Image 1 (cartoon, rainbow, N blue to C red):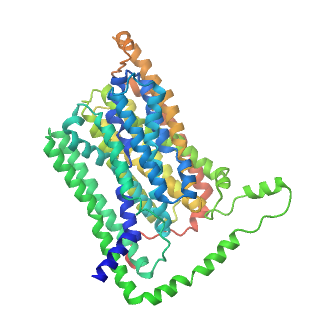
Image 2: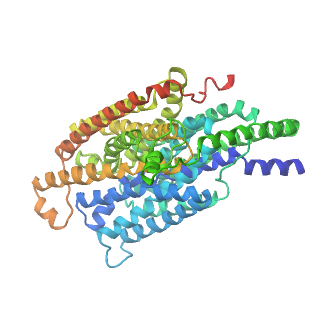
Image 3: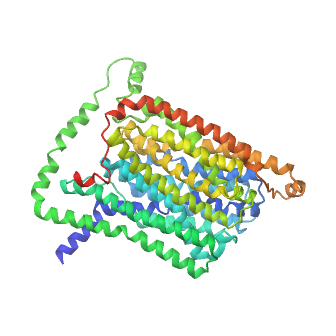
Length: 565
């Protein structure tokens, strides 16, 4: 019994259960991807024009991507406090949005207040990312690319997972009925999961034993295979739900399978902790000595990296503080913000990610304008979510392999991903029959891959000391891009085209503007295509600047080589 209790305590306190908790937490943290399902109900219930709806979507992106304050809190506070703040914001913001859309708040709130509600609710996502993702990167620093791919992959799957749970709770609502209960679901469910893992998500400073080093990559590959099976099941479920009319019981059965598959990684956790437990019993004295030995050189190295401030005037000291260290070492926040590398990554996020999010936010209205049935909105969201996951996982594992074997810079891979997303934008612009499903797949995959590659590049170029703040700074570019491309370009061009169509005067009187036809989004997505190509060119410039750094960079191990380590 004593051994069993010791093993249970090790599991609950170990790195692997912390990683599993992060996977579960982030599998509910992508509520922003479900906006296309319930956006039509926001528009019709509150009587918004398309530009006003896109303004709501822009503030959703503001909340979902601006997380500098979450990063700064994480620098000073433990992860549990970061997650607790995120839980409160998720519940409070989405609950008030739900009450507003269902008419339980009288009089109807003004546009600015609705924007505030959705921004607060969506801002829980950066807190979840910061609390879980940054903590995992610090706990598994040698496998950052693989870990980022898995974690961000579960964020990508979360849209499809939440959609399946919504259909199970509310039946065929996603097939064309009332989608407003989804707003409530994405408010309380993530908050409950955040609270459940408050004590689990934490930085674990235990030494990395030789056994852990040998098994680590094989464990990540096992997590990958389980997540791939989950993604495959969700894809099959989406196809069947698209082809057949499911009952609520069938939706519930589908959601139960998803829930059981989310529990499967727990078996991997138990396997890894059992191996460590056995090793600790047999080799505890040797491992303690090995853990203590490298601590002194690390402390000495840290001391050498922080020389005392040089004498001189205040301006000279300021210039010295802005002088960046070599790439890969720990930058200060100010050094990173003023560096050319960060500016190029920021620009790539601004136009590349901003264009893809504009497409995702408008999937419901794009499908409506091209004559797709309303039930297709849930299908589009699920396809984007699944392929978003595949993009993140593929970018994490494939870029790690290309970097370790061929020294291929991650920014170069990012440029290729941005160029691939151009295909999705062009399919939307020209409205090829049936192509919106393909566009959902392409844009979902590219969004996931691009997000992952940007985060990995930040960790490699600027170090991990202030990683939580730096990765959130790159995220601030995304809402700026969606404001320009979604609100000022797509929204205005949509309303302008709708005003030209028959019956527009009557529709405008009730603010129920609906545009039908390919022209509704053609011009706006041609603009998005052009700026995406420009973002790819900027990323190529970053790849040229960092090619020497990546030529000497030592990446982690791939699944195929993990057993040889």
